[in-house]
Image 1: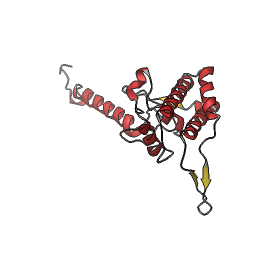
Image 2: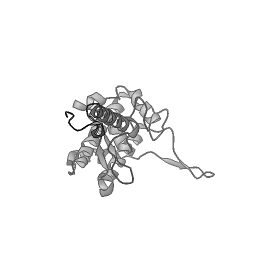
Image 3: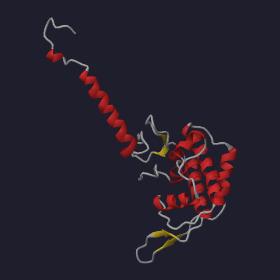
Image 4: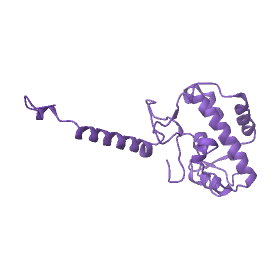
Length: 201
């Protein structure tokens, strides 16, 4: 699930973590203003519309995002996350998360609105903690193999062999590059069945 502005990579906390950051991750920055976080909420898996965000809440969201990124890269490397980064997740998760309401007729769950940013950040932190605490889940944390993408994603494929953050984006690009490389190789190779005895190679 993706659109031109946002990339959704298979796990709520990683979807959020891959919206930008510091250093090399500044290249991916999408949360420039409070309304950007509101748009991410509306477009993302939670489908939360009309989330009101102020500057301080955006700053706090950036602090949480940085901690989730660092935990994700530790898991990717097969290492234990740093104590200080886990502490940040624990602090955000300590507040109540998003509330759910069950519809009596359809028996479907929906998120109770209006939703606060504080509850949203708690939800994201709790998902990151669940990911870090589950051995099977954390073994599914991957980094996209595309040479022009470094996003971290959750491999939700049955065999656990997903290579790209998005099959329809980086996967298609990789297959197109491989096809062009094979085609270029064929142009420079003379098929054996066209050779006659004595012909130069």
